[in-house]
Image: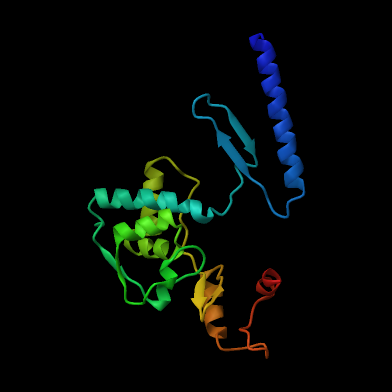
Length: 198
């Protein structure tokens, strides 16, 4: 088969894949953003790739880079410790939220929990040693200008139930409402939380 025929077939397959992604995303309740680059060929695929999106757990990799850089620069030590407290525990993925209060955990182990188990409590404790601003400064040095660590995870564990807090002000509101009830023994919830719980 000639090179031109192979190239034509590859372009047709790429166009079909792009159409399929557009078709699937049209039925998705949310915004789809995809950017991919083949590091060998330089070929890219971009479907809303410049849209700003929440990083979710992918931000843990830049935080990891920030920690390694801070340790290298002498701004943190792997043997630095954090103490696990009820206030430090957040929901979502990970195991630290289930561990005993008062446990002292080295930074090296926090990083392991953060990366291996995507532990949100560990991530927040890591950010006590290497701040989001420090992580962002390291990203800037690497030329990564559009990815930022903005804040800790604020999904608090409350009496065996998780309460997602989207902002610091929402976290304060949740704390202030704690103990209030809707008459059915359940804590008060915002309309968004009630909708998401169904």
